[in-house]
Length: 365
Image (tube, rainbow, N blue to C red; front, side, top):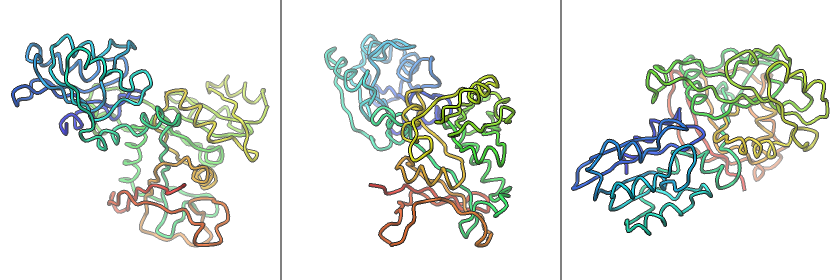
């Protein structure tokens, strides 16, 4: 199963919106076939493994990171392929949370006389697809909030100047985060101040896990813009890929101007005078968005944390000080007591060039 998980990782940047899946076929203690899902619309991991194994698949055990599918989508059911190949046993790390599968694939295999087992390295398998799992189980994408700050927790000077806080190595690391994301989200304040591109600017050879011939997939760009202040001449609207502007105020002329400039628009409910962020996340999930990378200023970042939408914070801490007049990381409701703090669970700390990269999970009830 560990090998199947390694194979699944190869699809980290290309399978979206499908889950990353790996499969290994073993017979008489020897690997006879293996495969991984590359991109939506292409054969699933099990199908690739069966092709490489050919007749040696008969009587083999299939180790799969996710329950084999049993429904017709863009590709035929993997359960049919495993049954036809004469596989004797299927071990899957986790049951597929997709309601179209959800145990039915394993049931179909058992009805065909194939022994099944689940739960082997389940935690590692779930970690492969945090966004797909959350979208299927909770109807929302997995949200990472990326921030860069000085050692004293400042993200920009009082004037708004922020280039560059983090190092080139950290910025390249962010490009890899973008490449694995389904969408990159920011607020209108960031757009008006910086006119960002919010795109992936590394080529396949620079992105770990991609073959040279793999095209770089540009994530959906999402701008939270309650009053439709997005300029039709914004840089991102002229770049490859799609941009979605989410507003809440009824201003059809402004929305129409953005559509004419190439943006998609969506009207969201309002909460406290702004775009209702939970409603927006549900809308993104309905569009098959698995993982959202939130790259924004303290207002939207604080609102997302306060709403319980942020699953992971990735903070690049640069070795310099910017002083008390510079802008902070999060605009959060007034915290007057220690008990009101937002607790974090530190997941990982590592060096990226001269900077520290800290990954943490908010401990919100």
